[in-house]
Length: 408
Ligand code: NAD
Image (cartoon, rainbow, N blue to C red):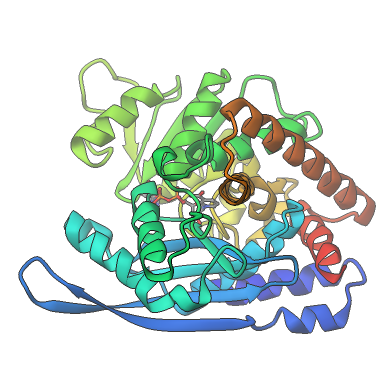
């Protein structure tokens, strides 16, 4: 099944445990609008290449469409549809006054120069500006899209439309209207959700943690969890992973990745005899208290779910667990804290950024994180209670909470 079929299957499963308005469910089988664009980019060698891009505007029931833009060589319309549907549910479960959308461009950004990347990002806005805007659709970063890319897009939007409020793109750098705390927000939000649920889940005070993906989300989650006294025993990027039972020094791992471009060779470096290299497939199946997928969809499937040894899965990536794998993990007593709750910190702080831009305000980081913690502690508690009442898993419960808010 592709990611969109998985997302639709999750909807059906949630609707089977609670009475959900059938008209709403029908409305969520297709997006309200989707646009495919071809973006011409003059390359450094003078040639022109055309990149395919998408924006899917799934639901505006609760407010302007909101959701990131992904740059990835395997980006495709079904993936973007799935991500846009999950955004719709995520904004609802987080109680944000936002709808759901998502964008993607089929590109390997590592193969573009900085200038080519800037022209591509500006070109994306050139093609789509008519359907973007603070009251219409507010994109944000996702995989391979950075604050700098958001700044280029924001600038291009202002040039084309004359709207200088800076509220059309979130995840911007601080000096370009970004919010304090935005770059840490998804990892921090995951931590707040985890803190709210860890006692209910029967987890120990000090935990062993495995993280797949070391980008904005996984890298920051690793730093936050380590600074809270937990042991990060394995972490990976797209090239593979490293593990060390005694705990990895995350700032050292990060410095190594920055210097060498990947984690390869880290464990062979002098002074780290207990570290070793592992594949991404192996990493998912190691014993630990908490497994934190923070990269791509479809990582925990019916094939590897029977071998997952984590006590709990905290989904910071979108869609890392397939519906069949959900059932296997539920039957094995391994709770999955679902993406639409666990990684909602990003969109919550993006919404704060949008609000600050519209009001011309700039909030302190402490204020941002206090608001974020309050929202996520409350919503995580609500989803937990709903799961208990419905005798179901946390994903179905989170979907039910979101769907009921969408009906309203
Ligand atoms: P990113 O581009 O900053 O980092 C992605 C990381 O995943 C990189 O370290 C990359 O090397 C790694 N990766 C890619 N393919 C992999 C593979 N096959 N196996 C292991 N690692 C792999 O992206 P990000 O913003 O950190 O997003 C990661 C996930 O979190 C995505 O699912 C995204 O949709 C989700 N998410 C992001 C945000 C956000 O605010 N950035 C918010 C909510 C959810």
